Image (cartoon, rainbow, N blue to C red; front, side):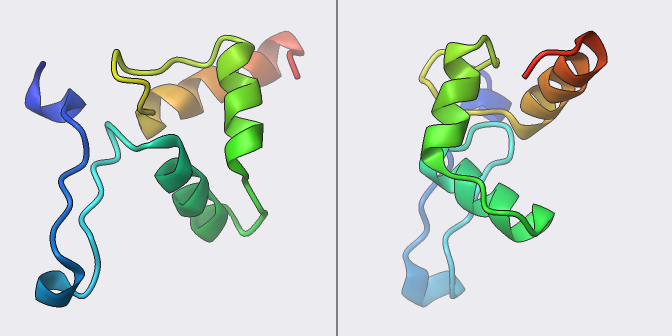
Length: 82
């Protein structure tokens, strides 16, 4: 597994004020939280799982690479996918 595909390391909250997240390997729950905060609209785990079931890419461990996911969304929008 390459470093960019490694799971997001968890740093004790007390030492950093928050945990560090790897945008190339986010757990589905973390990806939902990040996308909700950045996009301004609620993104749920269920929404992401629906996209994964529809073919959205995931890493071998089931985590989400936000760049790959965004590219998949653009492709889906261009082809009229849901």
